[in-house]
Amino acid sequence: MNDLVLHLDNIQKNFGGLKALSDVNLQVEEGTTHAIIGPNGAGKSTLLNVCIGRLKPDAGHVTFDGQELTGRKPHEIAQMGVARVFQTPEIFPEMSLLENVMLPAFSKRDGAFNMNAHKLLSRQSEIRAEAEHILEDVGLQEQITQEAGSLSRGDKRRLELGMCLILRPRLLLLDEPTAGMSRHDTNRTIDLLKKIKSRGMTKVIIEHDMHVVFSLADKVSVLARGQIIAGGTPEEVREDPKVKEAYLGGAH
Amino acid sequence: MSNMNVGKMNDLTRFLIFAVAILTMPIWMDPFGGNYPDLLQKFAIYGIFAIGFNILFGLTGYLSFGHAAFLGVGSYAAIWSFKLFTMNVIPALFFSVLFAGVLAFIIGQLSLRRTGIYFSILTLAFAQMFYSLAYSVLTPITNGETGLQLAHSDPRMIDSLFFEAGAGLPSTTLFGLKMSGYSGFYFCAVLLIVGFFVSMRIFRSPFGLMLKGIKSNQNRMMYTGLNTKPYMLTAFVISGMYAGLAGSLLAITDPIAGAERMQWTASGEVVLMTILGGVGTLAGPVIGAGLIKYFENIFSAFNDTVLAEIFSFLPEAMVDYAVTIAGLFVGSGWHLTLGLLFVVVVIFLPGGIVEGAGKLVKLVSKREKSTGGSVTQQDQPGE
Ligand SMILES: Nc1ncnc2c1ncn2[C@@H]1O[C@H](COP(=O)(O)OP(=O)(O)OP(=O)(O)O)[C@@H](O)[C@H]1O
Ligand SMILES: [Mg+2]
Image (tube, rainbow over all chains, first blue to last red; front, side, top):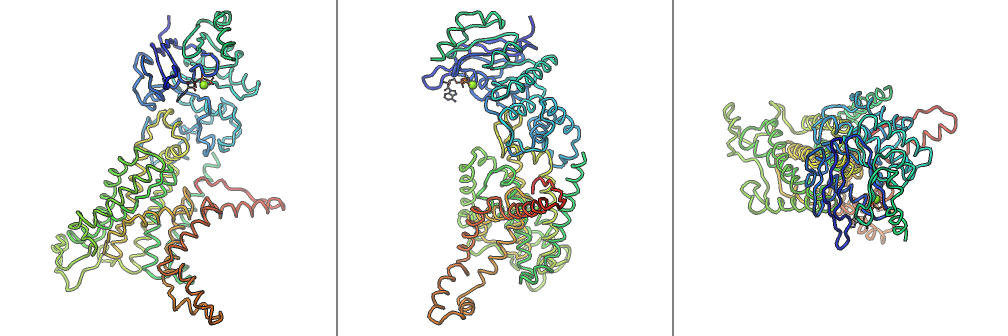
C-alpha cells in the first residue's frame, strides 16, 4: 500500500442541530485521484472546508502527510501543500489573469509573508514566465491582460485551477471543477488533470458529472447525509445498490 | 516582454511629470492666486498625508478614520525635538516618523482584528482617545489647549553646545537654511516627490500586489498560503509613518502643535482628499489634497463684505438674501461646500477626479479611433 497523504479520522461537524458530517473516515493514498460523490447537501463541501481549516471539526482529526491539520490556520495548511479549487470560484476579479496567477507564485516562492516592497513586479521575469506557462496549461494564454472578473464561469474555474497548480501542491482539492463548463472544456480539464496526475499530485475531487468521475478517479467514496455509505473503485461503487438508493432518495 | 518596458517608461515619465509639476508650483499657481509659501507648503504636506493614506486605503481597501492621530503625534514629536535637542529639522523628521510608526503599530495591531466598518470605528475611537488625552492626562506633553510651542527657555541641548541662544525665538533650519517661506516649501516638495516615488514603487512591487489581493479577495489570499495580517499591519504602519512625516512638516514650517490636529474632522479630511482625487490611483490623492486645501483657502477667506461686493449687481433688496445664503457656504461654512463637492464626486465620479479624467481621455481617443485616427490605447495599471 502507498503512503497516506490525507487521512480523515472520525470527523464530525454539526451546524446547530444538523449533522453535516458524522464519523467520516477517509484515506487518500499518495498519487491517486479520489472522487467524492453524493447528492446535494450531503456534506461534500463541508468535508473540504474541514480539511483546509475553514471549519473546525467538532470531533476527529485530519492528518496530512502524517501531520495534524486540525487547529492550524488556513494559510499554514496551504503552505504545507494543500490547495483548493472552490465550488464558487475564488479569484481576484479586479486583477488581470496574469496577476491572478503571479500572486500565488509569490506565495510559493516567498512564503506566507515577505516584505518585498523594494522589488519591481516587472522585473520578476521568472515568476512571470511560470505564470504564463500555467495559463497556457489551463488554456487561458490568449487573454492574460484581461480582467479576471470578466471571464465566464467556466473560465474562472480554469483560472482558479491555474492559481492552485502554480502552488505545486502535494494535495489538490477540487470542488466540482467542471461545473458550468461546456463538454469541450470539461474534456480539456479532464486531460489537464490527467497530466497533473502523471506528475504525482494527489487529488480529491468532488464531482456530479459521472463522465469526469470515471475518467479520473482511482477510488470513489459516496457521501450521503453526512456519512460515507460506500467506497471502492468506480466500478464497484457503480454497482452498489446503496448508492443508487442514496441518489434516488436525495432527489426527493 | 515589450509591454513591460512600456510600463516602466510610463512610470518614469509619470514620475518626472509629477516632480516637475510640484517643483514649478510657485509658477503655475500664480495665476490662480495660490502662489504664497503658506499655501504651497500645505499642498505638499497634505499631499504626503494623502499619499500615505492611499497606500492603506487605496491598496488594501481598509478605511481608517483615525489617521489624524499620527499627524498629531508627528507634530508633537517634532516640536519636542526642537525644544530638547536642536532646531535642525532632520532629527525632528526622524522622531516624528519613528513615533508615528510605533503608534501605528500599536493601533494597527488592535484595529486590524476587525474588518470593514468595525475597523473604521476602532481607528476612529483610538484617534478620538488620543485627542481627549491630549487635553487631559497628556497636557505635560501637549500643553493642552494652548498648544505646544517653542520657548526661549527650552534647553536645545545640541544647539546650545554650538552657539549662544539669540534674543528671539530661533527658527527651524536645515543646516542653517531657514525652513519658512519658499525654502520651506521646496523642502516639503522634495519630500513629497520622494514620498510619491516610494508609493509608486510599493504599487508596482510584489508587496503591493499582495495588498491589492487583500482588497480583492481575502479568502483566496488565505487559502493560497498568505498570512494577510502582517501585510495589513505593514501597510498600516507605512501609512502611519507618512502621516507622521506630514505632521512633522506642519511643525517644521510653523512650530506649534495643537490637539485639534488629531480631531476626527482632520481624519475625515484625508479620506475626502483621497476619494476626491481617486482612491488607489497614484497621483489622485495629491490632486485631491491640493484641491481641498486650495478651495479651503479661497472659500474661507470670503466674508460678508466681499460677498456683498460680488452681489452688488443685484437689486438692493436681494443683496442681503444672496449674501446670507452664499454666506452659508463660505468662511467658516466652507465645510458645507466641501460636503457638497464630495457628494457630487461620489455620485457622479465614483472613481474620483483621476478616473473621471481617464474616462474623458478614453472617450476622446475612441472618437478619434472611429474617425480613422490611429490612437494606441495605453495600458496604465494603477492609474
Ligand atoms: N457554514 C454553514 N452553516 C450552516 N449550515 C451549513 C454551513 N455549510 C453547510 N451547511 C449545511 O450543511 C449541509 C451540507 O452542506 P455542503 O455544502 O457540505 O453540501 P454539498 O454536499 O457540498 O452540497 P452541493 O452538492 O450542493 O454542493 C447542507 O445542509 C448545508 O445547508
Ligand atoms: Mg458543495
